[in-house]
Amino acid sequence: MRLKKVKGAKETIENSSYIILKPEEYRGKYQELFKNQNPIHLEIGMGKGDFIIGMALKYPNINFIGIEMFDSVIVRAVQKLEEKNIPNLKLIRFDATDIEKIFNKEIDTIYLNFSDPWPKNRHEHRRLTSERFLKRYDNVFKNTKHIIQKTDSRSLFEFSLMSFNNYNYKIKNLSLNLHQDNYDNVQTEYEQRKSAQGLPIYMVEVTK
Image: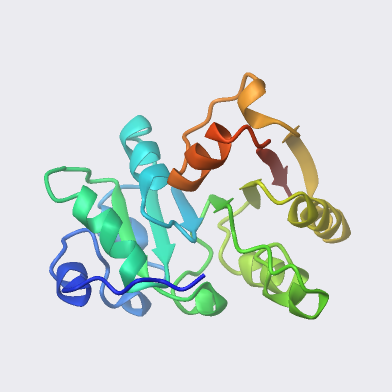
């Protein structure tokens, strides 16, 4: 999908107090940045921010970091935060392929919400639940490895279940239709649209 450029996006992002401009400098030091010892939860591919903002407001005793690689997308989250004061939330404009460069054994939970399914077999290594990425996450997690994934792609969901199993993750929770199940859920913008269309949302929570 082609992304529309947003006028002034770069300047808006760089001037936001929520944005970490040089995340490499905080590698291993994010608790110092938040000025507390609370758990740190990370959303990879945060989109326009509804999920990560909602989670930070709902759980003030957890620190949240959202990563998004596109200026034209993350700027929408920054705009939503202009009149808010959420001290347990930070955003990073970054490509998750290099995630080990900005985190080191300090993340408690990773959220993968509606990631690109990369449907072609030759692109499966780009999927955020591929073994290639699971290995990267090993160096990011603090102790227990904990991943929560939501997707509307049945093929990506099935691929992820196999990938998690092959990498020795254990399923803690699973839903084939999240919005029909009694599950504590903060929705993304994309999720709201797909749910309104009557499409099932798949969810899996795994630990290792």
